[in-house]
Amino acid sequence: MPTTEKGATAKRGAGRPRTAVLSRERIVEAALDLIDEVGAETFSVNLLAARLGVRPSSLYNHIAGKDDLLAAVQEVITDAIDSTMFETQPWANAVAGWARSYREAFIGHPHAIPLFATSPVAGAIRTMEMYERVVHGFERAGWPLQRIIPAIVALECFILGSAMDAVAPPDLFHPGDAAEHVPTLAAAFAAQDRGNGARTESDIAFQTGLAAMIAGLADRDPTPEQRQAPTRK
Amino acid sequence: MPTTEKGATAKRGAGRPRTAVLSRERIVEAALDLIDEVGAETFSVNLLAARLGVRPSSLYNHIAGKDDLLAAVQEVITDAIDSTMFETQPWANAVAGWARSYREAFIGHPHAIPLFATSPVAGAIRTMEMYERVVHGFERAGWPLQRIIPAIVALECFILGSAMDAVAPPDLFHPGDAAEHVPTLAAAFAAQDRGNGARTESDIAFQTGLAAMIAGLADRDPTPEQRQAPTRK
DNA sequence: ACCTGAACACCGTTCAAGT
DNA sequence: ACCTGAACACCGTTCAAGT
Image 1 (cartoon, each protein chain N blue to C red):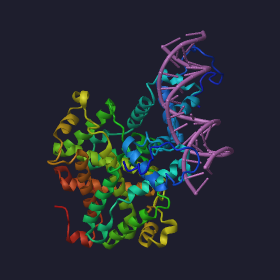
Image 2: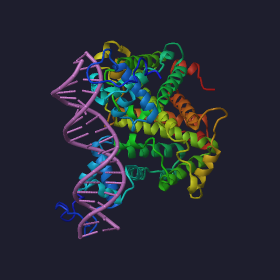
Image 3: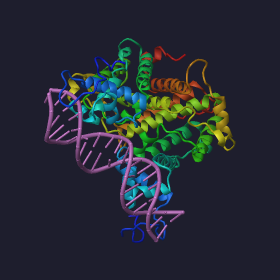
């Protein structure tokens, strides 16, 4: 309903309209909505144009092409990641909060994950600023400078992998008919800890892995802060 | 060179050839080769047909469609994952070896990772057998049954995320022109531990994260085996 | 400046017609 | 049974023509 403002339903003839019906912002917004609805592989420029009530060729007055459009969509998503906790909280808490926010930003747009996990962040200034805060948080916690980037990259690998997992069809590896051939797997599957509340299996695996990774990172490279205040219960 | 056997260069007329020029196996093999070469998004059925010296419609005598073809390609890749170490080695060593093999199987076919990370493994019997071995290895190491699946899922999230990272363009987050605005990030980037040998930044991040995760998992849920023989140096 | 409309070379898939 | 060839409804993109 937000796309209809004033008589956008009437057919437009050729030529420049009195007031522009498109803008880069409106296009990027609609693209993200469409990706969320139909998925990255179903998404197409033609489909987006139809959704905007416009000819496909019209979009090229505002975007350089599909790649340019997808890069803009990516920035919208990463803008939702909260990294301010690195300025206020102890290291382990900040990492945990940032990781959760990071994962949730991509879970909010599930279909976009495989689209962006491998594409570069060329010139995304706000994304850089996020990393600045994160690195600074590690530094203040006493981490030796040369080990910060590998630790952050490792965390991101886990976070993005977890976001993909959260989006995958549930019970991806359910033994099903083959249960007799793989009895131990079937038993572990049936017995698995599913938590007590609204947490999904993917949420539980994420918490398990995140806690393990933070503990392992802190343990392997202990800092004064970590030694005096181990945050795991 | 393995695709040319006997005069496959000559043009074929219409009608059934004396000996079949295609087979499901040959098609799947060629599809994986083509994905490796041109990437998942450039890959197309038409392109594959051209590579096989055949009309696109010919493929549909052997495959049900593109989805069926990609599922078959996926099984070829996962077959390369070695999980036998769970039958011979202590838990931490087995997990580390399996994880490395898992990551390498996907790194061997980089362009296939985003293609398969979210798609189901419907009826892939050999994949199930791998999980049977892995779960059994956890069980023998003393893991409580209900915690095994979440731990394995967490490991897989990290492994697949790491494989994607290994494939991404290097220095994805290099500050570049923005170095002045993000001085701490720039310093950490310049100082980062790049190892001494042929290891890439992605390899180092993987080893960092894997060691942390294994240590964290063992520490959080200690088993007799882990307590008596901590394998981290 | 910003939209339409026609065109281009693609894409995955179907199906009748050949042998 | 297994390939060709023509056809279908798509895809991303370009560009002249309108206003």
